[in-house]
Figure (cartoon, rainbow, N blue to C red):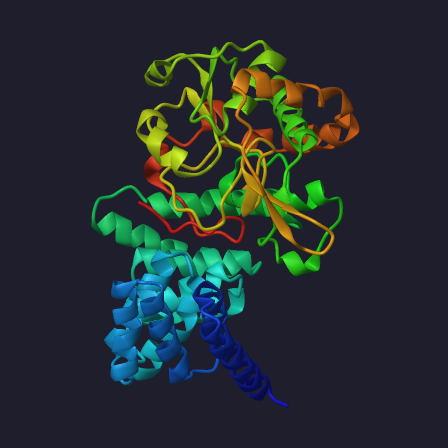
Length: 435
């Protein structure tokens, strides 16, 4: 059986399951399965028809109209493109692949759709497919932006020579407009780090792309690799020891790795992350400070939980190199204006021990667990109680890793300034480029 035949059979089974869900009025579940249907290579108008009905039942009228427009006009590329844009806006890039494919099938040289198709493949870690589409987009509409993505994806595919081939074109385009070659400089920095320390694992790739420290990965916290995770989709209720490991590692890093400044204050961006900030202050002796310190020349650390908090504080720190941004977790699909200097964890569905979450039993049943109501000054003691249990030998390895790379780390005086200038699509954390 060919791959297409397998997908057709799979699609039929999912469509039947969707019918069952709709009959039982399980519309949220039906929508989840429809999103999976849209990730398949095969096209079937029934998927769009069912999606329109489910959205109506969920009282999402505007979204339903987009799918209804496809159902009524199955040869209209604009209808598919609007559906794809809505899906991408909701970070459903895998599901956007099907409608984008249809747009490109109907209008083969639609450069914007071709680029977005490549972008969606990249979000799904389908690097070879992404590179093909970015090449096509660059051929149809050459620009520094399309050239950047061809070069960047080539680098992700370990083809440094192909990435470098585009440098003269990008540099020339910037020179025509009398602009600083921002994207080219980013690429050159990535290539420099790539050639100095060829990437082998997740932490290596993070270093190559961002030049910033990554302290923990989900794999390390789970204790063993899991091929089914694909590096992304993880559901972990982080424990107190996980948090303690991170702050102990960060403490030693700023003390032992060259390039970190001497800090005057610590500020949490929200109550969610405040227990970590209080615990780190207690551990290091660096005092807590008021939000106003972010606008001064004093050197400080801003803790965030890497959520909308980052957007709130961005304006205070984007142009201030004296602030080190520590993001305790990292959302895969979040687009935020500031890239952190240090990242504590790498995960999609992180839940810190004091936050509301779901507890999973051995049968996979989920039970809601409410958030702790104690103040952060009290919660911090749960973290500090685990500090003695931290494996210092493992921390030694991480300190050695970044000490070797200290001259290429984007921390302290080497921080990008302004930080708002650039973010990059990544198989670590896929964020659209912002210039």
